[in-house]
Length: 219
Image (tube, rainbow, N blue to C red; front, side, top):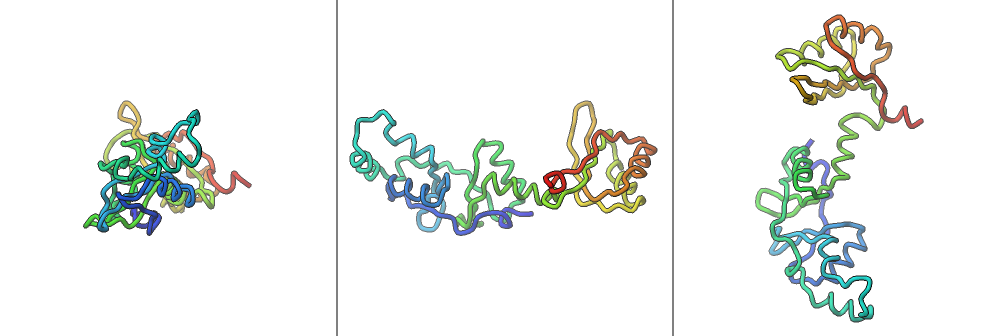
C-alpha cells in the first residue's frame, strides 16, 4: 500500500501572499488543520491552525471583532508559515508517511510528486484507516500471538504449520521484544483452532494470546 492509495487528493492550499484571515476561513470551512503553501505550482511551506492561533489576539484582548479581522487581514501567510516543511512522495510506502509523522510528532504531511508538485495530503486518520484495512478488522479476524526466538526459519516454519492445518493467513506481523524474543501476530479465520494450537505447541511455540478483534466484538 502506497501513499497515493490513501491520501486526500487535490488538497486545499494557499499562496504565500494570501492573508491570515483567508487561511483561517479555509480551515474553518473545510474543517482541516493544515494548509500547504504553494507558489508557482511548488510546495514552499505549510501553515497550521497552531500558526494562526500564535498570531491571533488572545481571548482577553480589548480589540473589537472588526479590529481583529483588520489585523489578520494585514498579515501574510509568508510571515507565519513554516518553510522547513516535511513532505512525502506520492509513490512512497504508506509506512514511510507514518514514520515521518511519528518522528516529527505531526498529524499530517503534504504529498508531492518527483518534481515537487503538491498532489495530496495524508494524515494520521488515513494511517489509522489503512491499518484497520491491512489487519482486516472491519470484518473481524482471529488473532494469534506467538512468542518465538530470533532465529532463521521461524517464519517459514510457522507458516507451514498453518498451511498443513488448512488455515489461510490474512496477515502476518513480527514485533521485536527484549532478550532476542519476537512476537509473531497472525490474523485470519481460524475455526476450531484447538488442533492448530496443539500443533504450534508440539513444535515448541508458545501462544501468548488468542482472540477475535473487529466486527464480531462490536455486535
